[in-house]
Image (cartoon, rainbow, N blue to C red; front, side, top):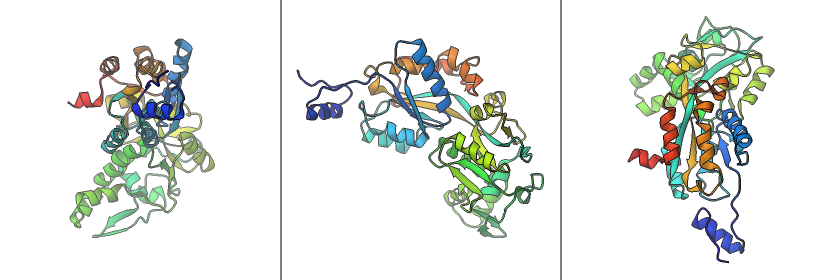
Length: 348
């Protein structure tokens, strides 16, 4: 019997080289953002329970790691969907194309807010401004015409209205999509609000150099990168009740018995303030579908459609209960999946 392709010429060549017929796996495979993980896990379980398809396998690892796996190529040994708490980057699209992943469907599932939370039994970090976090965590600060190492060792030294406890911040590591939002909407915004960005420009730094300095985080132990998921951040705060961590809204809302959230810019993080745009630190959440796998991996398109269906991703669905802020343009997203509209087609 001749060897027939399942996903790509590469998969065909590999199967023929081994003399074995290519086998199509029967479950959808997903990896990526730890923020999207709880939503994807809920949907995967419901999909397995309510359809004739097997329950998809959902793994975490971070947005960047998930997209890297997604861009490895087309074939049964590659994942079908990458979850991401940020949009796919141009460099990742290029890497995908170089590996034969040229048709990508971008699915925005809704919105999430970044919550700054501490131990419910710890000091009261009642209110933050982005400038507080910049002053606390920047590696270097402009002072009197020079750039100096960050001298601040307590939150009160940054802002007298904050608790007089040592700075211990547990922030998402660089492979997490949350880190990019943290850098842009907290560190860079705080740098600008505090006047530090302009001060560095006045000192002769280029705009790129100044912005890089704004988001460069100190490495003296005051800021700790968390490369795992939010459970690791929670464990750090449990070990140090004076610490402050960065969480997704859904994780925080499911751990209010042990965590309390601070306001940012005077606004409390809730689904309502995020949906309205009032809360300043929020971002869209996505998953990316490999179109070449649709029709080959059983249930892939059906799972994508199931994920964003009104009863699940709508404002009264179970995802909203877990902190997802429903996308007002959900109907457009549903149509995009139905018609298999790729990013290239959207941009043409």
